[in-house]
Length: 497
Ligand code: ATP
Ligand code: MG
Image (tube, rainbow, N blue to C red):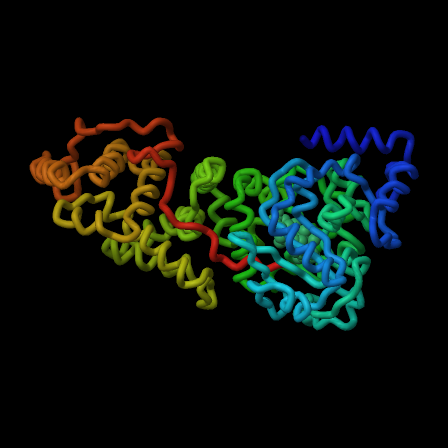
């Protein structure tokens, strides 16, 4: 599909300049296009007709069509913008559809029954249509002097409005500043995003240094798109990224958390880790992960976790942020657990280790409580599941995080972190979980009667009872699932800009 898009562009650009701002499309095509439009508008953008941009109008969902149409009927301009246009041109399925308009948030609000204004830094209207959510943003102004910034130049609040041109200038990368006019089926390009898409280049709009100062998270977005699209970064953009890394230290942890989720839960977690490591950004995204990646054991573990996560996304299975973060930080917890066990009983030592890892040096909680509660549950289930004390088994099976804890144990066993009997123990839990009452009772009885050396209370594991074998190292557990656990990532807020 990318190939098809590239071929279309090359075909229509034959003999023309490759410069990012070079006009494309024959004069003929442009004339026709303008003739077809009811309200011809004069733009300073390059305008690409359907033949060149290749977007199939059928791929625009009814919700985005309805929103742009309603705004347009009310006399406003409205375009599908950003990632959706980029992804459609590349033949990918967009994650979401955003609309940009010259209507103010209050004006947008009045036009839709199910709509609400969100955000303080950037006011956006969320319009619901059936089960879809469309984010409608008002064109931003480009007078940065009107915008509230902190001492580093980071934009704190920006509700200064403008026209489509200024809006384009305020977007992060050229490939994310494409505007699709749904009705006329034209893509407007103010910053050479179309040639950059063709050349597979990520380029910041404007002066990279300034743009990263305004919002350092743009550097993380570039890294994410490198991983997602396998594009290169333009040289000036890359130089500035290397020079501006430190600015990420001023970003609130909630926003970094959102970005981390986007890196690792959208189907290219492994590639994201490669890019973060290659460009030395892991430390700025998540210090603990940086430490974990510093050892072979840690890196092997993290890549196994991320591979499993990507497999789940590919299979359209849900992901739990708690499980993901518990996994990413685990090797550090394990290390501190071992350390504290020198002076403390195992369970106490684990508690100390967990406390250390979920808090920063100055006592701040690294993640929101909602996630740390899940992570602590998953971690503290580990010694209990490993020990398999018969009297604790029924309670453990009822534990709300049992499935996640069990998946975690299985992964540890598959990685060879639990010694020779680790896989047997993990599989035992899988069989136990799927068993009916009578079978469970029998398995417990066998566990009680097992030889002393086989578990912590001297009660051995029923090694011959394995009913299902795990299919491969990282692809299957005893319930035929790969990894966790019936929760979704959905409710992390991933606000625009
Ligand atoms: P995806 O949704 O696939 O992650 P996206 O590019 O659509 O990618 P969103 O977070 O949905 O990302 O943002 C929508 C658009 O808003 C972007 O394409 C870009 O034009 C603009 N945008 C997002 N974040 C920023 C930012 N930090 N600075 C400038 N523009 C941004
Ligand atoms: Mg998007």
